[in-house]
Length: 611
Image 1: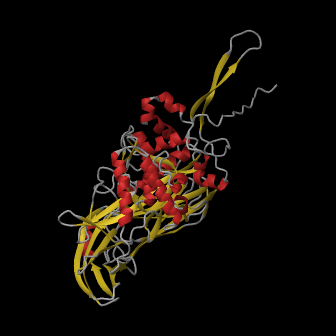
Image 2: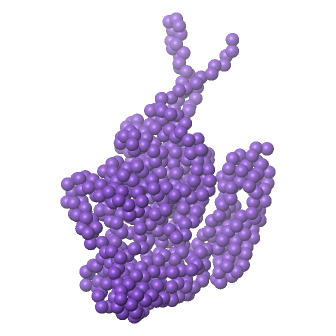
Image 3: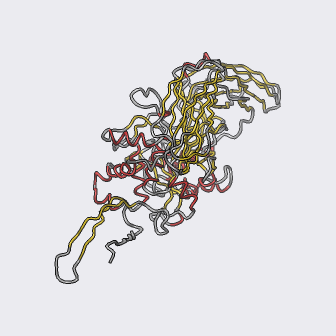
């Protein structure tokens, strides 16, 4: 008789995820003492391949993309210039699974009641909410400290991170001290890593012109003085781009209509139930305006649907709502396409077509549900204010229109040349005073430093259009440019005869040096392959403090860090080296070039086969 025995385990779909002991108990047929022997341990995860699991996903290609793929991309920049960057999730790196469970064990929920916490770990709604809270350091000494601008010398500049494993291992190895620093795309990358590691399908979402509504009234106000300078008030604003996550699972708490993609945001921007996290909120609920549903659906709804209003604040403190058509909230909501390194637009999963009757119907529904949601006086005030605003929202300026024109985005180091087009919409002569303001800004809309201002008096004949040339020199902006290389320009035009005011805004995204990678698309394990990186610098300024960072999951065992000499104007730098892939599958070679306070990234996919 063979002494070998095969044992197949069938775990119920509602079993909690975590570490299990596997014991063999032998009970004699006749009377005698039963014996128990520990055979080992196993780890149980969520299973998107099992039809009974709440995270079940039928499409195999999607499972490969949203669970198994250990690299990905997010989208950033500006609605007029959408760019992509890569992120290494590294969920299969040694130690990451253990850290993922430690993250659950370090949560406030676990500290309050470990037994209840463990009993709920069969619910992806619960687990994803805990993970989202633990990614930021507010409230719970979570993984990463947020910092949105300023001095990063006591930590790591967020733009220098290229993957999740280094952050998670640093948090673990240094005794669970929060790592410094991170911003929205890094929080989203960490959520992807941990949830994929636990078996939950998840992806990164990028949305352009997203609203941050502090008051909970589905409205965002922007205040300017008459010279076009933006005033920061109560933290509200519109971000050029914001990044969060969607995870795929059933919503037993809401009903099957709300199954599927669930939005969540680990960036600590607003409290939920006294803790800094947001979601999971059903994307279906967001689209349908069901803002009363758990969790934080009203917050997510506002990010892509809030009413944007521009106001001029007079010197005596009075405010006047003015015409502005430059901010359409919630545009180009994007994610990585399944199986391809391309952008997939998913805006229609979050909202109905802009300006449609259905969109207005959903907004009215959302307002009504907020109104019915509680007896808090402030909430009633907020809703009343929103309804009042909808009746006084200015239509297109009846006398005047304006727009900025930029032929081509300049490189960092070049002057900015643009044209402001002003048009008289009336049949009478019109005198206009135009005030211009330019400032360095971050992608979250935060104004850092005024750079330039100017004023022009213009007289327009009936229906005449005039062009005003604007030049902002490199000498004027170089000291104030931030790592986002973005400059916000505003024009406030006032008709002297009638006091009509229009506001025109434009963000100029300055181009950085370009990187090209020459490398094979296929390779064999343990065989060297040559890599050539070329950095092209077309600007008139020298680049100093130049470094090249190279990493690649499955391609490079130890990251490469090379110091480069200063890059002179209109010069190219070429760097050559070999790498030795050590793991089969798709490897992502990630190149980061840093100089002064800026960074540029590029990537290249390599299919690695066994020898």
